[in-house]
Length: 194
Image 1 (cartoon, rainbow, N blue to C red):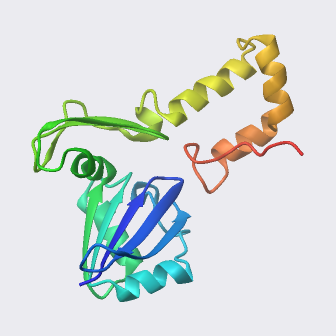
Image 2: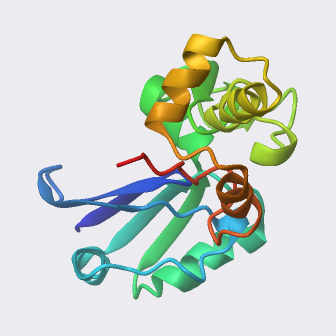
């Protein structure tokens, strides 16, 4: 029975199809799926669709899986004719790093989160409120502070000059990408200057 495992953040996802012996049949890197942000604009590539069509079971681990509604968004988007199970990325990190052993697991990337894993389920001391309201120390939080430091003239001048040479920091461009781009603040990138 071939299994498809999808691990996704907000910026990218990795799709891996395994045969019953655990051999990799195919692999793809695709744009990220965060069901908390909606999946309407996410297109499924031909390679990924082929993996969906060949899988007898699908396990989807992602940022933004916080409720039955977000899980249902993923199931509907995949439109698979097999069993689909949807889990948070934090649960995936727990299973991958600790298996059935208990311990504390944290994620630090575009977002941040941590929990206690008892070997079968996660226990949160503090709930994640997503990249806008929490995720302190994650990429979005650090990026926001970096941009604020530049615009508020708190950044050291040598770093500010290097930053200007590397990125498009026109205020209108930055604000357009933060507030108007279809990709939310957590996933936009400042385009590099040519």
